[in-house]
Image (cartoon, rainbow, N blue to C red; front, side, top):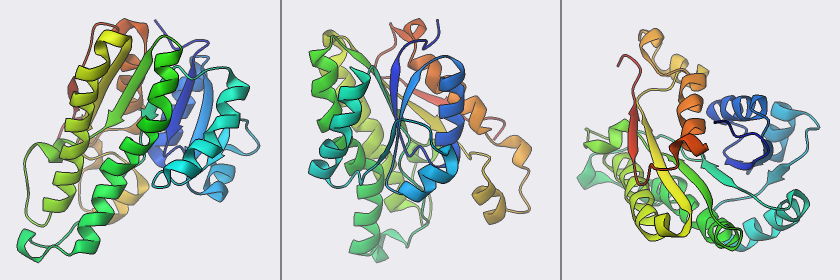
Length: 231
C-alpha cells in the first residue's frame, strides 16, 4: 500500500536524502510538511511549495511554535520521517573534545528527542501513525576517529527501539534504517577515488523508508534495517 492521502513530516528536508524522500512521497500522493533549519535552502529545493517549515530542532519551544500552524492547516500529521542529522569525523576517543561530542549528540540524538516531544502527543491524540529514523550502519560498531559519531547514531537507534517498545501498543510504528554510504555529491567529493556505484542511492533509501511508513509495514516494530547497497 502507498502513502496516498497521508501527511508526512520530513525533517532535514532540504538535504539530498530529504529531497529524494520528499519526491518519492509526493509521487505517492502524500501531503508534505518540509522541515529544515535553513529557510533559504528549503526555498531553493522546493520553490514556493506549501508546507515549508524553517525551525531549529535543538530549540523545542521554537520548533513547536513553527509546526503548530502547519499541523493545524494540514488537519493532522500521520508520519514522521526523521532525516535530520549528519556525519563528522572526530578525534581519538581519549582526545574527543566536549564541543565535538555535544555537536554530534545534538545533531543525531537530541534533535530526534525534540521533534518526538512535539509530534508524538499529536500522533497519539489522532489514533497513531508511523515514525522512521535514519541511523547508520557505522553505528553498529565503533571505528577509529568515529567514536563520537558512532555513539550519537547508536543513541538514535536505541531511542528508536525504546520508543517502539513504548508506543507499539498505542498505534504507532517506530522503525529505523541503517544506510552505509549514501551516494550524494558531498560524499563523492569527499571520496573521489571510491566506487559510488557500490553506495546507496538516495532514491533506494527513500523507497525503504516509505515502505516502513506505509500500511504494508504495519506489523514491523522496532526494526533497524540495514540498507547497505553493495558496500
